[in-house]
Length: 461
Image (cartoon, rainbow, N blue to C red; front, side):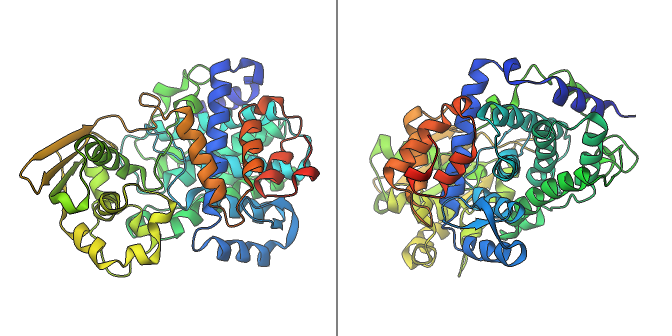
C-alpha cells in the first residue's frame, strides 16, 4: 500500500503559491520571522560556537551564512549550525497538536538550498514551507501514542524533504526516492529530552543534514526504499506504531498547518509555558514577587510533568533549566520575566534562587491525554495568608490565544540584539520588515545575508 505516500506526492505536485489563501501567506511570514529570530538568539547559546566549529572543520568555509554570525560555511554545515541555533534555546514555534517543531528542520534546509542555488523567490519559499509543514504535521497528527523517538526531528526531516522536492521541481519517482533516502537516515530519541542533553538540538541539526544529503544523492541518481510510509518496516510500522494518517489525508490542501503553528513567548520548553503565563498573570494582578511568597503549587498534565517536573539540582546547565518548572517559576518571581538571559551560570547556581525553587511543588493532574500541554494551574500562598490561583487552558502563542504583533516584533528585535554578533537595530528592522512581505522578494538569499549581519550596503534591496 502507498496511500500515504501518494497523498503526499499529490499535495507536493498540486500546491502552488496561488493556491495559498492570503491569510496563510501572512501567517507563514510570521512563522518565518519567528524562526529567523530563534536562529539569531541561538547563535549566542553556550555550545553554539562549538557546533559551528565542528561544522567548519567537517565542511569548510563556503557561501552559506550562519545566522547571527559573520561565518560562511558550505551549505550542509551552515544548515546544521542554523538548525541547532533555531532549536537550542527551546524558543522555536511548533504545531501543538502534532507535537512537531517542523520549522526547526524545514527552514534551515530550504534556506540552505536557496543560498546554495540562488534565484529562489519569497513565493517559492512560502510555498515550500507550507508543503513541508503539512507533511510534518500529518505524521505528527497521526500519532496515537506518546513519543518515544524525537518526533520534531523525524517528522521535520520528512517535511524538509517535501519542501525541497518542491523547490527542486523533482518528479514523483525522484521525490519517492528522496523520501526513501531520508527515511533510511532517520534517528532521534526522547532520551535526550528526558536527560536534558544538548543532543536535543543536535538531533535537529542531524535531521537538516540528512534531508539535504538525501537531495544531493537523488540528484546523483542514488536510490532508496520506496514504501517508507506504509511498508512492513515503514514509518507507521516502525516509528509510529498504531499511528493512523487516514483521518488527516483529506485535509491536505485544505487545512494549512502553518497557520495552526503556535509561538513561544518565553525561551523555555513549551511544556512550561502555561505555568509561566499563569504565574506571571498572578504577579501582575496581585502585585507580589519572591519576597511575598510562602508556597507555590503547579498542577500540570502527565506529559508536562514528565518533561518539566524535574527538580532543581547543583550544576544545572541551560538545557536542563529551560524545562525545570521550579527553576523557571523561581526565576520569574525573582526577575519578573523569563528571557534568554535567565540561564546564566550565575543564575543557575544562585543559592537563593535554588532555595526558592526547591520549595516549589509540581504535581500531576488527572489528564488522560498522553500529549496534553494543558490546562496548567498555579496556586500561590502569600505571606499575608492570601491564596491566589490561576489556570491557563490555552497556551499563549497558540492560534486561539495569539501573541500580539508587538510581542512578535519584540521577540524578533530582542533576539537580533542577543545574537553572537548582534544585528544593528536598523538592519534588524529591515530584515523583519522584509520577512513580513516575503512574497515580494525575488531572491531570499539577501535575507540570509542580513541575518548574518553583513554590510547593509552590500545586500540587494
